[in-house]
Length: 421
Image (tube, rainbow, N blue to C red; front, side, top):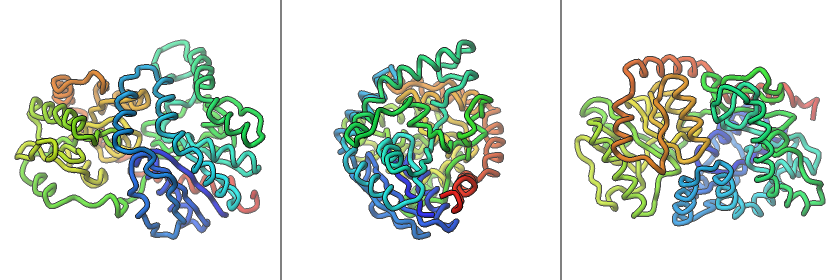
């Protein structure tokens, strides 16, 4: 088949789609992947080893100052719907037009379309052309069920979801419906169950060790496992400096907020004060990720090493624990590495990941970025229980037996064999 994929977001939103595109291409399909990165232009240099046609559109969406402003405002907002509105209007709408043009072109030349759940232009374009559309979820936080809800209350889940779906549809549906009207299409169905989740097929790219399938999830929702892949060339390697630091003492704690790490010097300095202060108060050796610690006046020593980046798949297994923001990719990478986590969440979805790790017994209660202090973070680092490494290692062994990409390819081939197209 000719298969078109489209994704948008940060590294954690692009990497799973690159992995899936590679898997589909190796399975014999002719694959095109369109990517829009919010915060980087690095993907323009990416070359597919298997021959996937890669196209980068409107990247980066935002400049450093805009990213800092959006991150700070979203982290301060406590209402998930307000956070959603900020992310859509701040990080998605500026790229909507070129993404829609790319989606229409992709649909015209492909038999099957596969999109990041947030990329409604592709969903709309596929529906308009009568082409089959598969949605990919990278988190299970918004899968409705009478047995679970992100608020974690022990009762009233069904009612909570009704209210949640109504509020979400009211807040988010104007964006795709505006595009639908432009294309001469009627308003779409429920935002959650008809747009974000494809009624035809939705792939949930989360390890079943973390995402517990609920009995009332639709049969069209398939849990594939983590959409993982070997390190890409652009992710680099462990530097000699990192190797020397690892060899010089006990396993450190790796500290990263991923794409939520500030880049503006003033904001980055405050970020480094938080993480460095927590590391020193905890008494732990630490590797701290920041864009340019030296420019902010921070220098590495025997206890703390500052790095601009390190490939998570290479560094996490060699650390004692990971302090992170609770992004989908970082969370699953830390879990696959068999390491306990300390989560400092910026938004509601990240807090959900933190709560899931807590449920599994490999993290404490997640902290919130807008109220965290060095003292609170150091206390959470010291509070990691002695049994957590063994629990994390057991989960990692189970995850290592999974192959999310192979399972996703199998499901797609089973449902959309050439005789069905």
